[in-house]
Image (tube, rainbow, N blue to C red; front, side, top):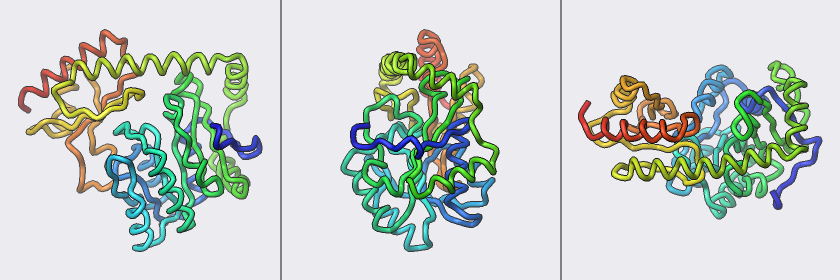
Length: 300
């Protein structure tokens, strides 16, 4: 981005973006350490935390994303080793944190000396500046190519603060998470040829079309989505619970992800589901959403 451009030596490559997250967290947090995350977070991060023996600490959020005062409060109760945040098209809610809140979060991290892992896997659908533009010395930016190019091209990468390159590189090596040569060569060639740029433009247009379908078919329901995102967050009408609705959807051959899969606190789980919009052909997507709307209007 215009306000942030890491040097080539700050880029480390992994087999996929999940491995980039795992390596970065492993380099920053010892077993037993605490990581501040949004109260709803990427389920794979919950799995990584369990494997690494680290504790995820849910941060209070509002319509702008994580609240800086919640970061400070969590750090006061027991030091946070790192923040893992998704400020751009947050998974699962599709919330994007605005520029001023990003600056405040970066300032809080700087004041408290807390490193940040910024997951930007969906950033190709937007033009937002990263948190790293405000705190480059603390922020580790994770991204990958599978979402923006193709599922089979699973190269992940992390842009690391200059002082931490060796530590993260050591974690990549010890975890066996290095990128394969073929995938790297394919990625470089597609970038140079402009293929990646064309695919990103096509996917932006495709996501916008699919969001319009969501707006049409689920207009009577409490659906949170961003017109740029490939997913949506549906807060279910009573008396539906996430588990019963997920089962009812499955009975119609439709897969949705229940809200508890994203909840950091198992005692505070939302009656909501995440709708993935990217895979099905558009006519099938419309039929599936129409079916789900009919299910939601009924009773469990």
